[in-house]
Amino acid sequence: MDIKPVHKATCHCGAVELALTMPNGLEDPRRCSCSMCRKRGAIAASVLLENLKVVKGEDNLTLYQFNTMTAKHYFCKTCGIYTHHHRRSNPHQFAINVACLEGVNPYELEPVRITDGINHPSDAS
Ligand SMILES: [Zn+2]
Image (tube, helix red, strand yellow):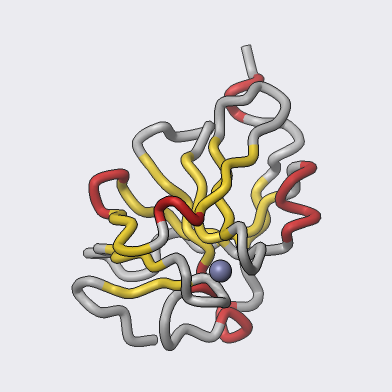
């Protein structure tokens, strides 16, 4: 897998384009079992907040929130593809949709670890 110093990610229609800096390559790609992720089905990898720039289509992104309304899930309002979200479990990170990365075949990453999103770390007391 060829991850560039600044890697391009796009939604399906191309309205939204992200520039990602991933010094350690694809970091911790995983699926999650929470109510949102199990329907979305995407494999997410981690990117520090400062390492994600919306190059194009900021105004074409729609925000979805649920439950504690902490995480911010973004998707393209034209093609509906989930591009990234601001994590609840780690506010210093975005999670990005691995399938949006240019030249990356998400099926080559299987089997992917599944994290327990039902028992969310932020819910533990
Ligand atoms: Zn789109």
